[in-house]
Image (tube, rainbow over all chains, first blue to last red; front, side, top):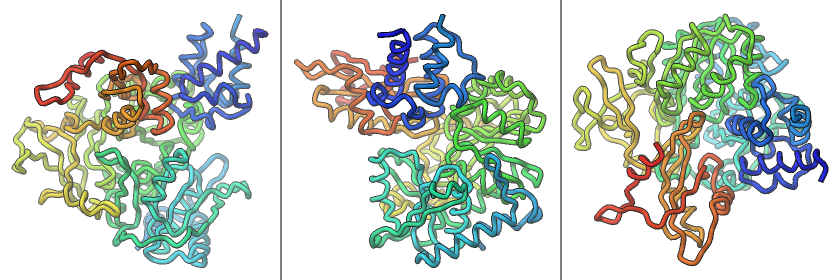
Length: 83
Length: 474
């Protein structure tokens, strides 16, 4: 598995743990977080969980549609932050 | 009189009444859209007394539909379009609507509404109701709270009075308009001649802050979870909000810690803590923590036109400092539960509506909420019935005993946690049990943690001692 694929897999696992749905493991990467059931409170959980899982820092100002829209945009954000 | 008349009471017709993203509707434009839709609805057979289900997100279309259905003399039944398929089916069988209004995505317009007739709706008595708002009942099932036009207007005016809302006010609404809370924000702002700025949700706090700055928002209301999210993200906003005048908290207990973080995140902004329930339309008490810093932790005193009585179990009135049940009465009280006169009767006494909430009043009349006697708590502003969650957990073949209790949570207020005893020989995991619940319950009701134990401590009469479990979680 390439590092990018491993990161995406980990993001999917984080989402699956938050939404309690295995659907997150298999859906297309451009499905919106909203469609996956990530509500406003779950967004905070997601932020913490990503920071924890990848040992990165995500600023509150980065929680916006550009980065927190779909698995695809999250993967791009994580890839940029991971050393 | 109809709800749309609120738009004509103050302010002139050219002034903005509703803003969503780049679209601004003046009072006059909004009234025009309402009249157009009302004519369409009448043509589609909507008549006085018809029940019309509104499954619309926070869009101008929601506001237009609400006022148009009301203008037809019909009963509006707003439901959250984010409900799961299962919840929607259960709700539809309770609601029995004649007509359903949904967003018309095809036109791409923010005010587009699709009108569909349902198969012949069965008879149901909703006499006197202008709106039926669905809320979780004490036994966990949904209840339809019937509110008359008088109720909605009385409560809207009372809220406008204590918030001192005026024509220059701009209210940000991000809570779902299908909630009595958001509906009250909408109608109270309209009644004062102010303008409402709609957001679909609070998913991106940065967008909420940008909207506040761009539209010079003067006030907003949230459940404690919304306030925790905003207070936490406040430093990311950058721009100061010199227009912001007040913040409302309602829909769950506001802890002193959270009240303090809100005060620090929004210095100089007046924080009001409120208490109420859908059945009173929905606001009952309020307190400004700026005006009464010594009363932090209190839910305040009765708002205009609401009578709050704290009663003992024998229906005598509780003394100062003595805890009793909160009973509410006044012109904004519901006319009853939809299709459930038995429950309505059990919740009413000569003092009014028995809320199931327990509280005491201090010598100045400020009320302090003490919780509930039944097993209901709030998570992110939504009611959770421990009994309902326990029933689902016990439906899993791997569980023989279960007790659900609330666990304090900094963002959500509280979350459900389950203590379960496995059936001998079965090896169900916590994740399996959570997934089992997630398929059967709304998200906020799914236990956040599962603790398997060998046994649950019981009283002599065989009742599970939940107090002991709650202490474990503190």
